[in-house]
Amino acid sequence: MTDCTPVHTIRDGVYAASLTPLRGDLSIDHAAYAKHAHWLLQHGCDGLAVMGTTGEATSFSIAERQEALERLLIEGLPPARLMVGTGCAALPDTIALTRHARANGVNAVLTLPPFYYKSPSDDGLFAAFDQLIQAVGDTRLKVYLYHFPQMSAVPFSNALIERLLTAYPDTIAGMKDSSGDVHHMLEVIAQFPRLRLFAGTEQYLVDVLRAGGAGCISATINITCRLTQKLYRQWSGGGTFMLQQQITGIRRTVETLPVIPALKCVMAQLTKQTAWQHVRPPHVPLNRAGTEFLQKITQQVAQSL
Image (cartoon, rainbow, N blue to C red; front, side, top):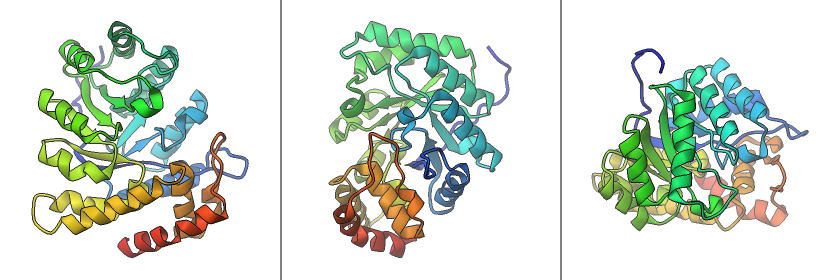
């Protein structure tokens, strides 16, 4: 294990699952990436989840993902406000990305289970996280389990969560629950009160906070950042119903389209920079009908900023 340097954990609150801007050749536009990251922090985000699903992480090589983090840090993004996606199908890649995050001062990693082979046993999944944590060998590491069964098809059972927490109580720090099932989120919070649960959609932010959850990490916070931070600050008081309805309406509208191209389309309309619409295959940019459909959402977002 490493030295006894104090561990700074990420704060509770509102996190954008950050988009990754691309150039015309579909390489990462690092300058635009850093600019967007700073913009999100300036417009209400407590922190950022980078190189996750919304960031198209699985469409990038390990080297590209490592360079993306390095360039963000060079541009002044504070490590304590970043959660880095490190989960891959191959355990050595997950280890490499997690070691890289720690070597660059980032404690918090958001980690998918190995997701290619379906219906693995809890023994197999435990072994993957056990080997990850042992291989990194750093007491400052904070692992956030990425529960996204619709995408990974490999959920975290409650029995597995309990086993991981028992084995690594100081390392398994929390979960991003992107299942879309608020009952599952509330069940996990109730059963594992020391596990910091972040809802994967802002439409359940208030429900999760009322139950004792940590906050929200969401794709649509790229555009609802101001509104969601306002809701986070006011949730325990009155007058939040209309605000929650507005945020939920934006989320549900975006979800009627392919989410990543839709969010990039809104960013293109907000910034008047068409390069925002670049996505890596298998994603494709929205067609004209989709672009026009989102104009009202763009207007709502612009008024909130």
